[in-house]
Amino acid sequence: MTLIKSISGIRGTIGGNPGDGLTPNDIVKYTAAYGRWVLQTTGINKVVIGRDARISGEMVKNLVVGTLMSIGIDVVDIGLSTTPTVEIAVPDEKAGGGIIITASHNPKQWNALKLLNAHGEFINDAEGQAVLAIAEDSDLDFAEVDDIGKVTTNDTYLQKHIDKILALPLVDVGAITKANFKVVIDCVNSSGGIFLPALLKQLGVTQIEELFCTPNGQFPHDPEPLPENLVALSSKVIETKANLGIAVDPDVDRLCFVDENGAMFGEEYTLVTVADYILQYNPGNTVSNLSSTRALRDVTELNGGVYNASAVGEVNVVTKMKQNNAVIGGEGNGGIIYPELHYGRDALVGIALFLTHLAKTGKTVSALRATYPAYYISKNKITLTEGMDIDGLLKKMELKYQHQPYSAIDGLKIEFDKQWVHLRKSNTEPVIRIYAEAETLENAGKLAEKIIADIKSIIAA
Image (cartoon, rainbow, N blue to C red):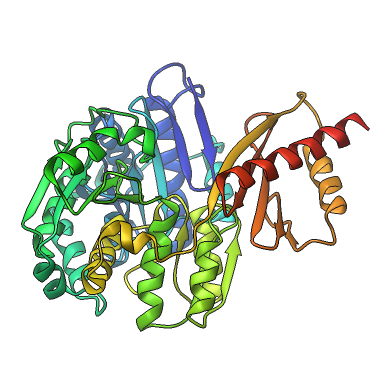
Protein backbone atom coordinates (compact mmCIF):
# COMPACT_ATOMS: atom_id res chain seq x y z
CA MET A 1 0.00 0.00 0.00
CA THR A 2 1.18 3.54 -0.74
CA LEU A 3 0.21 7.03 0.42
CA ILE A 4 2.04 10.03 -1.04
CA LYS A 5 1.49 13.51 0.36
CA SER A 6 2.71 16.21 -2.03
CA ILE A 7 2.11 19.91 -2.59
CA SER A 8 -0.64 19.39 -5.16
CA GLY A 9 -2.59 16.70 -3.35
CA ILE A 10 -2.87 13.33 -1.67
CA ARG A 11 -2.32 10.22 -3.77
CA GLY A 12 -2.41 6.58 -2.81
CA THR A 13 -3.63 3.07 -3.34
CA ILE A 14 -7.11 2.22 -2.11
CA GLY A 15 -7.36 0.14 1.05
CA GLY A 16 -4.95 -0.99 3.74
CA ASN A 17 -4.18 0.69 7.04
CA PRO A 18 -4.62 4.43 7.67
CA GLY A 19 -1.44 6.27 6.76
CA ASP A 20 -0.27 3.43 4.51
CA GLY A 21 -2.90 3.69 1.78
CA LEU A 22 -5.65 6.06 0.71
CA THR A 23 -8.15 4.91 3.32
CA PRO A 24 -11.41 6.61 4.41
CA ASN A 25 -9.50 7.96 7.45
CA ASP A 26 -6.92 9.61 5.22
CA ILE A 27 -9.52 10.98 2.81
CA VAL A 28 -11.44 12.60 5.68
CA LYS A 29 -8.28 13.91 7.34
CA TYR A 30 -6.85 15.65 4.30
CA THR A 31 -10.17 16.82 2.89
CA ALA A 32 -10.99 18.48 6.22
CA ALA A 33 -7.54 20.12 6.29
CA TYR A 34 -7.95 21.42 2.75
CA GLY A 35 -11.45 22.71 3.50
CA ARG A 36 -10.16 24.51 6.58
CA TRP A 37 -7.35 26.03 4.50
CA VAL A 38 -9.89 27.29 1.93
CA LEU A 39 -11.95 28.94 4.67
CA GLN A 40 -8.89 30.50 6.29
CA THR A 41 -7.38 31.88 3.10
CA THR A 42 -10.44 32.90 1.07
CA GLY A 43 -13.35 33.17 3.50
CA ILE A 44 -15.44 31.40 0.84
CA ASN A 45 -17.42 28.37 2.00
CA LYS A 46 -17.80 26.79 -1.43
CA VAL A 47 -15.72 24.07 -3.11
CA VAL A 48 -16.20 22.46 -6.53
CA ILE A 49 -15.57 18.73 -6.90
CA GLY A 50 -15.44 16.41 -9.89
CA ARG A 51 -14.04 12.97 -10.54
CA ASP A 52 -12.84 10.61 -13.22
CA ALA A 53 -14.47 7.21 -13.70
CA ARG A 54 -12.23 5.13 -11.43
CA ILE A 55 -13.84 2.23 -9.63
CA SER A 56 -13.18 3.92 -6.28
CA GLY A 57 -14.37 7.33 -7.45
CA GLU A 58 -17.90 7.21 -6.08
CA MET A 59 -16.69 6.05 -2.66
CA VAL A 60 -14.03 8.72 -2.44
CA LYS A 61 -16.43 11.39 -3.66
CA ASN A 62 -18.98 10.54 -0.98
CA LEU A 63 -16.33 10.84 1.72
CA VAL A 64 -15.06 14.14 0.32
CA VAL A 65 -18.56 15.62 0.03
CA GLY A 66 -19.55 14.57 3.54
CA THR A 67 -16.33 15.88 5.04
CA LEU A 68 -16.62 19.28 3.37
CA MET A 69 -20.24 19.55 4.52
CA SER A 70 -19.18 18.64 8.06
CA ILE A 71 -16.97 21.73 8.31
CA GLY A 72 -19.61 24.06 6.90
CA ILE A 73 -18.59 24.12 3.25
CA ASP A 74 -21.11 24.07 0.41
CA VAL A 75 -20.21 21.63 -2.36
CA VAL A 76 -20.83 22.00 -6.09
CA ASP A 77 -20.62 18.47 -7.47
CA ILE A 78 -20.09 18.46 -11.24
CA GLY A 79 -19.99 14.66 -11.37
CA LEU A 80 -18.00 12.61 -13.87
CA SER A 81 -15.66 15.20 -15.26
CA THR A 82 -12.12 16.04 -16.33
CA THR A 83 -9.34 17.83 -14.50
CA PRO A 84 -9.48 20.87 -16.83
CA THR A 85 -13.27 21.05 -16.54
CA VAL A 86 -13.06 21.33 -12.75
CA GLU A 87 -10.34 23.96 -13.16
CA ILE A 88 -12.70 26.00 -15.32
CA ALA A 89 -15.66 25.49 -12.98
CA VAL A 90 -13.94 26.82 -9.82
CA PRO A 91 -13.71 30.50 -10.90
CA ASP A 92 -17.02 30.28 -12.78
CA GLU A 93 -18.69 29.20 -9.54
CA LYS A 94 -16.76 31.84 -7.54
CA ALA A 95 -15.66 29.01 -5.26
CA GLY A 96 -12.80 29.06 -2.78
CA GLY A 97 -11.20 26.03 -4.41
CA GLY A 98 -11.75 22.66 -6.00
CA ILE A 99 -10.93 18.99 -5.54
CA ILE A 100 -10.45 16.68 -8.49
CA ILE A 101 -10.79 13.03 -7.51
CA THR A 102 -8.39 11.32 -9.87
CA ALA A 103 -5.02 9.60 -9.86
CA SER A 104 -4.42 10.77 -13.42
CA HIS A 105 -2.49 8.11 -15.36
CA ASN A 106 -1.94 5.75 -12.41
CA PRO A 107 -3.45 2.23 -12.52
CA LYS A 108 -6.94 1.46 -11.22
CA GLN A 109 -5.93 0.70 -7.61
CA TRP A 110 -4.85 4.33 -7.21
CA ASN A 111 -6.90 7.43 -6.51
CA ALA A 112 -6.07 10.94 -5.34
CA LEU A 113 -7.31 14.31 -4.20
CA LYS A 114 -5.92 16.99 -6.52
CA LEU A 115 -6.26 20.37 -4.83
CA LEU A 116 -7.03 23.67 -6.55
CA ASN A 117 -6.97 27.28 -5.36
CA ALA A 118 -9.69 29.86 -5.99
CA HIS A 119 -8.31 30.52 -9.50
CA GLY A 120 -8.83 26.89 -10.46
CA GLU A 121 -5.07 26.28 -10.49
CA PHE A 122 -3.06 23.72 -8.54
CA ILE A 123 -1.96 24.95 -5.13
CA ASN A 124 1.71 25.82 -4.85
CA ASP A 125 4.38 24.52 -2.49
CA ALA A 126 3.69 26.94 0.36
CA GLU A 127 -0.06 26.36 0.12
CA GLY A 128 0.43 22.61 0.02
CA GLN A 129 2.63 22.69 3.10
CA ALA A 130 -0.02 24.74 4.89
CA VAL A 131 -2.67 22.11 4.11
CA LEU A 132 -0.42 19.31 5.36
CA ALA A 133 0.28 21.26 8.56
CA ILE A 134 -3.44 21.71 9.20
CA ALA A 135 -3.95 17.97 8.67
CA GLU A 136 -1.68 17.27 11.62
CA ASP A 137 -3.63 19.65 13.87
CA SER A 138 -5.75 17.58 16.23
CA ASP A 139 -7.84 20.62 17.19
CA LEU A 140 -9.79 20.73 13.94
CA ASP A 141 -13.43 21.72 14.67
CA PHE A 142 -16.50 20.50 12.80
CA ALA A 143 -19.72 22.42 12.20
CA GLU A 144 -22.80 22.15 14.37
CA VAL A 145 -25.97 20.88 12.77
CA ASP A 146 -27.38 24.24 11.61
CA ASP A 147 -24.06 25.13 9.96
CA ILE A 148 -23.53 22.00 7.90
CA GLY A 149 -22.81 22.70 4.23
CA LYS A 150 -25.17 22.01 1.36
CA VAL A 151 -24.64 20.05 -1.86
CA THR A 152 -25.60 21.20 -5.34
CA THR A 153 -25.18 18.99 -8.38
CA ASN A 154 -24.37 20.70 -11.66
CA ASP A 155 -24.13 18.71 -14.88
CA THR A 156 -23.74 21.71 -17.21
CA TYR A 157 -19.97 21.99 -17.22
CA LEU A 158 -19.30 19.53 -20.02
CA GLN A 159 -21.13 21.87 -22.38
CA LYS A 160 -19.75 25.01 -20.73
CA HIS A 161 -16.21 23.73 -21.25
CA ILE A 162 -16.89 22.89 -24.88
CA ASP A 163 -18.58 26.26 -25.46
CA LYS A 164 -15.49 28.07 -24.14
CA ILE A 165 -13.29 26.05 -26.51
CA LEU A 166 -15.53 26.70 -29.52
CA ALA A 167 -15.47 30.43 -28.74
CA LEU A 168 -11.67 30.65 -29.00
CA PRO A 169 -10.62 32.69 -32.07
CA LEU A 170 -8.03 30.10 -33.12
CA VAL A 171 -10.47 27.17 -33.09
CA ASP A 172 -11.97 26.94 -36.58
CA VAL A 173 -14.98 24.61 -36.66
CA GLY A 174 -15.57 25.38 -40.34
CA ALA A 175 -12.09 24.23 -41.33
CA ILE A 176 -12.38 21.05 -39.26
CA THR A 177 -15.81 20.25 -40.67
CA LYS A 178 -14.59 20.77 -44.24
CA ALA A 179 -11.61 18.46 -43.66
CA ASN A 180 -14.04 15.59 -42.92
CA PHE A 181 -11.62 13.79 -40.63
CA LYS A 182 -12.11 10.18 -39.62
CA VAL A 183 -10.90 9.83 -36.02
CA VAL A 184 -10.35 6.90 -33.67
CA ILE A 185 -10.36 7.68 -29.95
CA ASP A 186 -9.12 5.70 -26.93
CA CYS A 187 -10.57 7.06 -23.68
CA VAL A 188 -9.43 4.18 -21.41
CA ASN A 189 -12.99 3.71 -20.09
CA SER A 190 -12.92 6.93 -18.11
CA SER A 191 -14.60 10.32 -18.37
CA GLY A 192 -12.95 11.09 -21.70
CA GLY A 193 -15.49 8.63 -23.10
CA ILE A 194 -18.15 11.24 -22.35
CA PHE A 195 -16.22 14.39 -23.19
CA LEU A 196 -14.28 13.50 -26.36
CA PRO A 197 -17.21 12.34 -28.52
CA ALA A 198 -19.22 15.41 -27.45
CA LEU A 199 -16.35 17.76 -28.31
CA LEU A 200 -15.52 16.12 -31.63
CA LYS A 201 -19.12 16.18 -32.82
CA GLN A 202 -19.40 19.90 -32.05
CA LEU A 203 -16.12 20.49 -33.86
CA GLY A 204 -17.73 19.01 -36.98
CA VAL A 205 -16.16 15.54 -36.85
CA THR A 206 -18.84 13.04 -37.92
CA GLN A 207 -16.70 9.92 -38.37
CA ILE A 208 -15.69 8.81 -34.87
CA GLU A 209 -14.55 5.28 -34.01
CA GLU A 210 -14.76 4.81 -30.25
CA LEU A 211 -12.42 2.53 -28.30
CA PHE A 212 -12.87 2.06 -24.56
CA CYS A 213 -15.35 4.89 -24.11
CA THR A 214 -17.55 3.33 -21.41
CA PRO A 215 -16.82 5.35 -18.23
CA ASN A 216 -16.76 2.41 -15.80
CA GLY A 217 -13.16 2.66 -14.59
CA GLN A 218 -12.25 -0.77 -15.97
CA PHE A 219 -9.04 0.31 -17.69
CA PRO A 220 -8.42 -2.04 -20.65
CA HIS A 221 -4.69 -1.32 -20.55
CA ASP A 222 -2.22 0.69 -18.49
CA PRO A 223 -3.89 4.12 -18.56
CA GLU A 224 -0.74 6.14 -19.22
CA PRO A 225 -0.91 7.17 -22.91
CA LEU A 226 2.45 5.69 -23.94
CA PRO A 227 3.15 3.81 -27.21
CA GLU A 228 3.27 0.38 -25.56
CA ASN A 229 -0.24 0.96 -24.15
CA LEU A 230 -1.85 2.14 -27.38
CA VAL A 231 -1.50 -0.93 -29.60
CA ALA A 232 -5.27 -1.28 -30.02
CA LEU A 233 -5.59 2.36 -31.05
CA SER A 234 -2.85 2.04 -33.68
CA SER A 235 -4.40 -1.12 -35.07
CA LYS A 236 -7.86 0.45 -35.28
CA VAL A 237 -6.52 3.51 -37.13
CA ILE A 238 -4.98 1.23 -39.75
CA GLU A 239 -8.01 -1.07 -39.92
CA THR A 240 -10.50 1.76 -40.43
CA LYS A 241 -8.22 3.88 -42.64
CA ALA A 242 -8.69 6.78 -40.24
CA ASN A 243 -6.88 10.12 -40.54
CA LEU A 244 -5.63 9.93 -36.97
CA GLY A 245 -6.03 8.44 -33.53
CA ILE A 246 -6.42 10.34 -30.26
CA ALA A 247 -5.66 9.05 -26.77
CA VAL A 248 -6.15 10.69 -23.40
CA ASP A 249 -5.48 9.64 -19.81
CA PRO A 250 -8.29 9.02 -17.28
CA ASP A 251 -8.67 12.68 -16.24
CA VAL A 252 -8.15 14.11 -19.74
CA ASP A 253 -5.25 16.45 -19.07
CA ARG A 254 -2.74 14.50 -21.19
CA LEU A 255 -3.05 14.03 -24.93
CA CYS A 256 -1.28 12.12 -27.67
CA PHE A 257 -1.91 11.31 -31.31
CA VAL A 258 -1.41 8.42 -33.72
CA ASP A 259 -0.84 9.19 -37.40
CA GLU A 260 -2.68 7.71 -40.37
CA ASN A 261 -0.15 4.87 -40.56
CA GLY A 262 -0.72 3.83 -36.94
CA ALA A 263 2.62 5.33 -35.86
CA MET A 264 2.97 7.40 -32.72
CA PHE A 265 3.07 11.14 -33.33
CA GLY A 266 5.17 11.46 -30.16
CA GLU A 267 3.69 12.86 -26.96
CA GLU A 268 6.53 15.41 -26.81
CA TYR A 269 5.30 16.79 -30.13
CA THR A 270 1.71 17.35 -29.02
CA LEU A 271 2.74 20.63 -27.38
CA VAL A 272 5.24 21.49 -30.13
CA THR A 273 2.57 21.24 -32.84
CA VAL A 274 -0.08 23.20 -30.99
CA ALA A 275 2.49 25.85 -30.04
CA ASP A 276 3.57 26.19 -33.67
CA TYR A 277 -0.02 26.86 -34.66
CA ILE A 278 -0.62 29.39 -31.87
CA LEU A 279 2.64 31.24 -32.55
CA GLN A 280 1.84 31.69 -36.24
CA TYR A 281 -1.22 33.76 -35.34
CA ASN A 282 -0.24 35.07 -31.91
CA PRO A 283 3.56 35.49 -31.66
CA GLY A 284 4.96 35.38 -28.14
CA ASN A 285 6.84 33.37 -25.56
CA THR A 286 6.56 29.73 -24.54
CA VAL A 287 7.40 27.61 -21.50
CA SER A 288 7.85 23.89 -20.88
CA ASN A 289 9.64 22.00 -18.14
CA LEU A 290 13.32 21.11 -18.17
CA SER A 291 12.67 17.50 -19.24
CA SER A 292 10.71 18.46 -22.36
CA THR A 293 11.99 18.41 -25.92
CA ARG A 294 14.17 21.16 -27.38
CA ALA A 295 11.85 21.22 -30.39
CA LEU A 296 9.56 23.71 -28.58
CA ARG A 297 12.48 26.12 -28.22
CA ASP A 298 13.31 25.74 -31.93
CA VAL A 299 9.72 26.40 -33.00
CA THR A 300 9.40 29.35 -30.60
CA GLU A 301 12.58 31.05 -31.80
CA LEU A 302 11.66 30.43 -35.44
CA ASN A 303 8.45 32.39 -34.77
CA GLY A 304 10.31 35.23 -33.04
CA GLY A 305 9.48 34.32 -29.44
CA VAL A 306 11.52 33.49 -26.37
CA TYR A 307 11.47 30.05 -24.78
CA ASN A 308 11.89 29.52 -21.04
CA ALA A 309 12.20 26.28 -19.04
CA SER A 310 10.66 25.67 -15.63
CA ALA A 311 11.13 23.06 -12.95
CA VAL A 312 9.14 19.88 -13.51
CA GLY A 313 5.51 20.08 -12.33
CA GLU A 314 2.44 21.82 -13.71
CA VAL A 315 2.36 24.48 -11.00
CA ASN A 316 5.98 25.40 -11.85
CA VAL A 317 5.18 25.63 -15.57
CA VAL A 318 2.20 27.89 -14.86
CA THR A 319 4.27 30.15 -12.58
CA LYS A 320 6.97 30.53 -15.25
CA MET A 321 4.34 31.16 -17.94
CA LYS A 322 2.88 34.02 -15.93
CA GLN A 323 6.33 35.48 -15.24
CA ASN A 324 7.19 35.46 -18.94
CA ASN A 325 3.75 36.26 -20.35
CA ALA A 326 3.78 33.03 -22.36
CA VAL A 327 1.04 32.56 -24.95
CA ILE A 328 1.32 28.76 -24.82
CA GLY A 329 3.10 26.25 -22.61
CA GLY A 330 2.91 22.86 -21.03
CA GLU A 331 4.79 19.65 -20.50
CA GLY A 332 6.32 17.07 -22.79
CA ASN A 333 3.98 14.37 -21.51
CA GLY A 334 1.24 15.68 -23.78
CA GLY A 335 0.07 18.43 -21.44
CA ILE A 336 -1.05 21.65 -23.17
CA ILE A 337 -1.66 24.84 -21.19
CA TYR A 338 -3.39 27.58 -23.19
CA PRO A 339 -3.83 30.70 -21.01
CA GLU A 340 -6.50 32.19 -23.23
CA LEU A 341 -8.77 29.44 -21.89
CA HIS A 342 -7.24 28.73 -18.46
CA TYR A 343 -3.96 27.94 -16.71
CA GLY A 344 -4.16 24.15 -16.65
CA ARG A 345 -3.27 21.18 -18.82
CA ASP A 346 -6.24 20.58 -21.08
CA ALA A 347 -6.46 17.76 -23.63
CA LEU A 348 -9.81 19.04 -24.94
CA VAL A 349 -8.51 22.42 -26.07
CA GLY A 350 -5.41 20.66 -27.37
CA ILE A 351 -7.59 18.48 -29.62
CA ALA A 352 -9.48 21.49 -30.98
CA LEU A 353 -6.31 23.45 -31.75
CA PHE A 354 -4.50 20.44 -33.24
CA LEU A 355 -7.39 19.57 -35.55
CA THR A 356 -7.70 23.20 -36.65
CA HIS A 357 -3.98 23.31 -37.47
CA LEU A 358 -4.14 19.98 -39.29
CA ALA A 359 -7.16 21.07 -41.31
CA LYS A 360 -5.61 24.39 -42.30
CA THR A 361 -2.34 22.82 -43.43
CA GLY A 362 -4.11 20.21 -45.54
CA LYS A 363 -1.38 17.75 -44.60
CA THR A 364 -1.61 14.22 -43.31
CA VAL A 365 -0.64 13.77 -39.67
CA SER A 366 2.65 12.11 -40.62
CA ALA A 367 3.49 14.92 -43.05
CA LEU A 368 2.74 17.51 -40.40
CA ARG A 369 5.02 15.70 -37.93
CA ALA A 370 7.82 15.70 -40.52
CA THR A 371 7.84 19.51 -40.58
CA TYR A 372 9.22 19.71 -37.03
CA PRO A 373 12.80 19.21 -35.83
CA ALA A 374 13.48 15.58 -34.98
CA TYR A 375 14.72 14.92 -31.44
CA TYR A 376 14.70 11.74 -29.40
CA ILE A 377 14.70 11.33 -25.62
CA SER A 378 16.38 8.44 -23.80
CA LYS A 379 15.09 7.84 -20.26
CA ASN A 380 17.39 6.12 -17.79
CA LYS A 381 18.10 5.92 -14.08
CA ILE A 382 20.92 4.98 -11.76
CA THR A 383 20.24 3.41 -8.36
CA LEU A 384 22.54 4.55 -5.57
CA THR A 385 23.38 3.33 -2.10
CA GLU A 386 20.74 4.15 0.53
CA GLY A 387 21.71 7.30 2.44
CA MET A 388 24.08 8.63 -0.22
CA ASP A 389 24.34 12.43 -0.50
CA ILE A 390 22.62 12.81 -3.87
CA ASP A 391 22.54 16.61 -3.67
CA GLY A 392 26.29 16.62 -3.11
CA LEU A 393 26.76 14.27 -6.06
CA LEU A 394 24.75 16.54 -8.33
CA LYS A 395 26.79 19.52 -7.14
CA LYS A 396 29.99 17.74 -8.17
CA MET A 397 28.47 17.08 -11.59
CA GLU A 398 27.55 20.76 -11.81
CA LEU A 399 31.17 21.72 -11.11
CA LYS A 400 32.43 19.21 -13.68
CA TYR A 401 30.26 20.78 -16.38
CA GLN A 402 30.30 24.39 -15.19
CA HIS A 403 31.61 25.61 -18.54
CA GLN A 404 28.55 24.24 -20.37
CA PRO A 405 25.18 26.02 -20.31
CA TYR A 406 23.32 24.49 -17.38
CA SER A 407 20.39 24.95 -15.00
CA ALA A 408 20.19 23.83 -11.37
CA ILE A 409 16.60 24.95 -10.64
CA ASP A 410 15.41 21.34 -10.64
CA GLY A 411 18.19 18.81 -10.30
CA LEU A 412 20.78 19.54 -13.00
CA LYS A 413 20.26 20.10 -16.72
CA ILE A 414 23.34 20.42 -18.93
CA GLU A 415 23.23 21.52 -22.56
CA PHE A 416 25.60 20.41 -25.31
CA ASP A 417 24.67 22.45 -28.38
CA LYS A 418 21.37 20.83 -29.45
CA GLN A 419 21.73 17.93 -27.03
CA TRP A 420 20.92 18.01 -23.33
CA VAL A 421 20.82 15.81 -20.27
CA HIS A 422 18.64 16.32 -17.19
CA LEU A 423 19.40 14.69 -13.85
CA ARG A 424 16.71 14.63 -11.15
CA LYS A 425 16.73 12.81 -7.85
CA SER A 426 13.72 10.75 -6.81
CA ASN A 427 11.82 11.94 -3.74
CA THR A 428 10.96 8.40 -2.69
CA GLU A 429 14.03 6.24 -3.41
CA PRO A 430 17.84 6.54 -3.81
CA VAL A 431 17.64 7.02 -7.56
CA ILE A 432 18.81 9.65 -10.05
CA ARG A 433 16.62 9.79 -13.15
CA ILE A 434 18.56 10.70 -16.27
CA TYR A 435 16.82 12.11 -19.35
CA ALA A 436 18.94 12.77 -22.43
CA GLU A 437 17.88 14.22 -25.78
CA ALA A 438 19.68 14.28 -29.12
CA GLU A 439 18.88 14.26 -32.82
CA THR A 440 19.03 10.45 -32.87
CA LEU A 441 18.01 7.94 -30.23
CA GLU A 442 21.47 6.36 -30.47
CA ASN A 443 23.18 9.65 -29.63
CA ALA A 444 20.74 10.31 -26.79
CA GLY A 445 21.61 6.91 -25.36
CA LYS A 446 25.33 7.58 -25.72
CA LEU A 447 24.98 10.90 -23.90
CA ALA A 448 23.10 9.21 -21.06
CA GLU A 449 25.79 6.50 -20.85
CA LYS A 450 28.53 9.15 -20.64
CA ILE A 451 26.76 10.95 -17.80
CA ILE A 452 26.16 7.68 -15.93
CA ALA A 453 29.88 6.86 -16.31
CA ASP A 454 30.75 10.31 -14.90
CA ILE A 455 28.47 9.74 -11.90
CA LYS A 456 30.05 6.34 -11.21
CA SER A 457 33.51 7.87 -11.50
CA ILE A 458 32.66 10.56 -8.95
CA ILE A 459 31.25 7.95 -6.56
CA ALA A 460 34.38 5.80 -6.91
CA ALA A 461 36.77 8.73 -6.31
